[in-house]
Length: 395
Figure 1 (cartoon, rainbow, N blue to C red):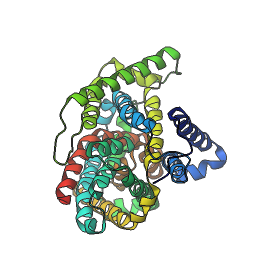
Figure 2: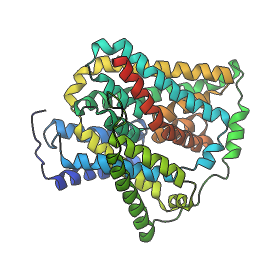
Figure 3: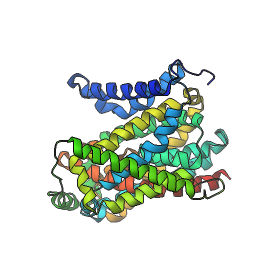
Figure 4: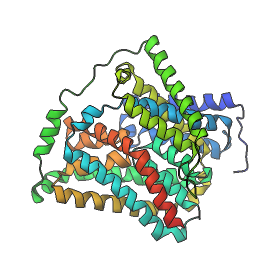
């Protein structure tokens, strides 16, 4: 992209992104638009409105604001989200639920290299870096996508087709799963699945809900202080550690992300977990969605011209993923609910997994959220492993 953008001042760029995010979520809260945002979640608009703004020349394709948001808000969001992970409730999910999430992750890890091997000749030489970023998104969510992209050095121009494939193929697959919810009784009867596992899981989670409190100024200050102090410390420590791999798989940014994820999970067993009762995860998600706007603004929409091959690769990738899930489901007699929710816990993350779970069994939406949390926890580590496999395929 040759233009520099109508808006140049970093603070004005930041205000524009924040305004877009605020407008999207305000509109998503309107009852008149409820059906629209159920089909197309706010995350899509957080991506594409900044992307279109850059394409038509309102925003610059590069800005210090984008660099700052990615460098610091990514570890800030991940730290808060990991601190507030209720691993005790996750442990109560039961073996079938956990195994199906892991099977979904394994399917993504296998599908990426297969898709790249098949469609690699039709794609740019650095397509493996875009695939690595997409694997991060499809194992846990957007924060993982950004982390893996920064780790392998995914070019900004590659984000265009990757974001399109992520949203169109990913949410298209979500639509397929929603359609098949009407077939779950037939599936469970035909394959004699262990449907009692659903009731057992529901009973285990009956008392898993934390008591929430109104957000207060002292607690909000504590959340921001802990989040930014931890993020800055992790970034500085990551900068001091060496990059690893040729091509680079573990970059300075990767070290920072690994530090905040690991430390955050450890802190989730301490009294800091109670920050969740005062809105810590909501602050983390707010930072994550602001991060989405910056990623969207850096994307080159013209790169969508490469999308046909990317689309085909994405479809093959999802096909391998679901084949692995169905194979494991047959072996352990998992109900169709766990197949669908285990898939969306990876591909869609915490935004979509509860929706799919709720459609299959209305009372089980919290199970979808907890399964998605497992995907988040696995995402960074499994995404780095997938990136390494992709680099081997790319040669």
